[in-house]
Image (cartoon, rainbow, N blue to C red; front, side):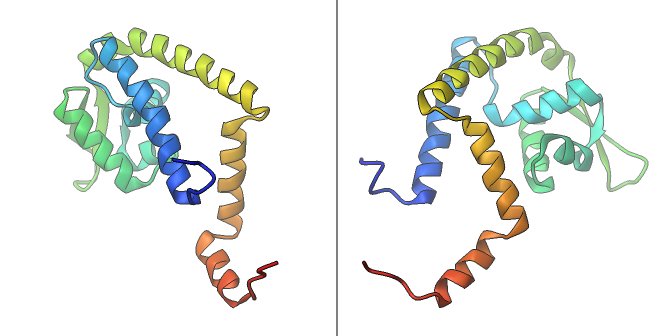
Length: 159
């Protein structure tokens, strides 16, 4: 499939599939039952200790819903525990001893992943994380829905 014929959404999905698929395979190769989506949550728990799902969502820069779904998947795999917080609606998430034991393996894979990402950045001639962060910053200032509405009323040039 030609990248030039693909739409923005298709290209973004393919990029995530390529990156996450390869990283997930590195976890499988290391004998770990672990998914790339767990990494922001694990890193937040390592850095900040036990936390609410809301706090984890903020630390990991993901939505509250995504953090909750990820935490539930991690709990099913024995990587985190959940206990009631001060507020009955609040759940406190903590790493299990199993998760703590695999952190050194995860660190090694994360270091390798970062090195591989740097090679991609070098070949691109720009920092992919910087480009994505800049795009997200711009979308925070002017959401894509607003851009769609504006584009719908602007005349389309067929030059």
